[in-house]
Length: 114
Length: 114
Image 1: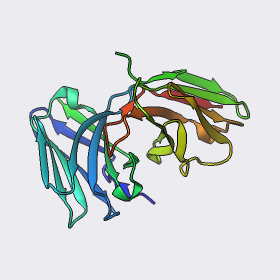
Image 2: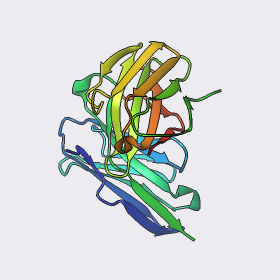
Image 3: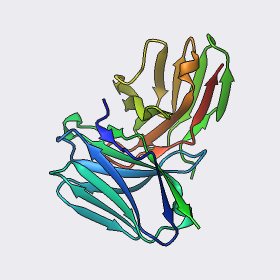
Image 4: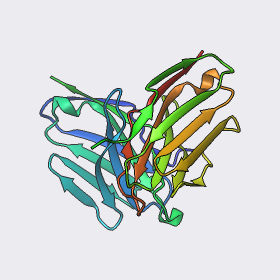
């Protein structure tokens, strides 16, 4: 049973436009959310995170929005660049675990079109 | 500065054979995670260690899988006997223990069981 769901396996966006990647979660105890980015033949790398006390966190071209009532978060990339083509994983942490364990979604493959 | 090191990068074996995957975490990190990535299940946590002690192995699929961390700089994931359904990419990640600190992933081991 997936606690973190990324329902879109893939997404194609024109270069220069906005990319929006979505993520839903089922566990209301999750209080910390992260996005990781993965290129082929490499391990995932941390991109951006957000605590449940916030509804928005921005880092350059990347912004994560959190809607706790809907148990939904999204990653916005503006403007999209060719180097953004990768698989993006949404992840969440449960404070009840009192450790570093995080639960990942299945990932969304983003294609930036020239 | 070396990141997380995994070996081998690729492993092809026949059903029934023993497979051992190796991981060297980043020096100074005291939490280590083993993940498996498949198309069907995404990135799933198998087991993680804190200060060389296994904390949560609930993600280990069955008794054929075992993991050890004999010291702070080395961990192994063993599959015995291996089966075709074990074919996946296996990642090791490490972090400095503390709530939701960024996990640093190795490049992964692509395992193919024929």
